[in-house]
Length: 90
Image: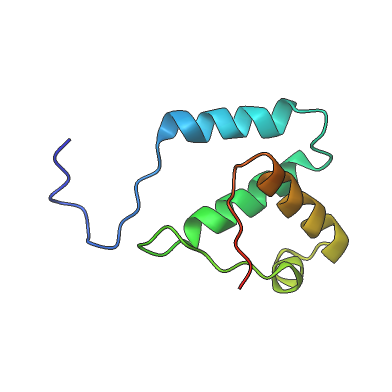
């Protein structure tokens, strides 16, 4: 696919993978907070840099989304355990 018209800092997301992740989050009984988990995933995608990296601080994210910190950490853990997000600690 010729993407010469896309800005240099554009990140492309595979729609099939995104659909697969969304269906997993919404249907998995182990995901206790599917809507919040989807919000966090979308937040991570929208904040990615050109190297597909994003900085996530659970405390700041909880405040930004106006939700409980422990709930946010559970959602992030779900995304990490299910290999939807690969989290590296600095």
